[in-house]
Amino acid sequence: MAFMGSESTSSSSSSTVFGFKYDVFLSFRGSDTRKTFTDHFYAALNQKGIFTFRDDEKLERGTFIAPELLRAIEESRFAVVIISQDYASSSWCLIELAKIVECMEKERLIILPIFHYIDPSDVRNLGKTFGEVFAKHEERDKDNIEEVHKWKAALTKVAKIAGWDLRDKNAFISKDN
Image 1 (cartoon, rainbow, N blue to C red):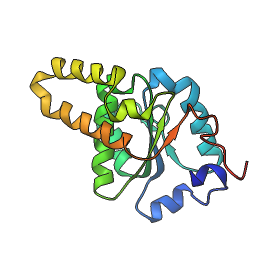
Image 2: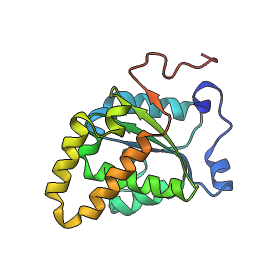
Image 3: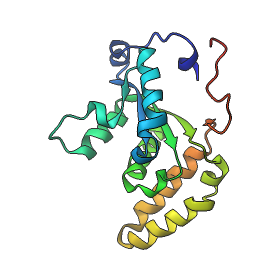
């Protein structure tokens, strides 16, 4: 990841010039990674001057969460999707992910997946718990099955993008470190 290993020239003002409010939108399952990996990653991005949207930092109190988050996705240059073991069990994460993929397909967003101690092929192939989770979504959301299929397609599409596998100890080591 280019912006992790060298000083970034990015700033909130440079993002705005190009029509982006944020450099990065972070998508993650809070209960899995918020107090561990995501907090450290977010701090590293900020330290490099990379203007990052994270749900608990940028939301104004009293606003509806859905419109604010979906707008933040549209206003971002990159989406870093931290796919963890329970990411797909959250309907909210999957709604967010579908919007991220929609923006990517409009060529307005670049997706950078991080596989948080899971096998990327399990995500791509909906193996292990990922298949079970989607079976539960399909059972629970029978009246909204098209949305569930959209979520599934979004997750498998993102899992096919080259990303970082945190099981690899050198996943974020750069030449500059």
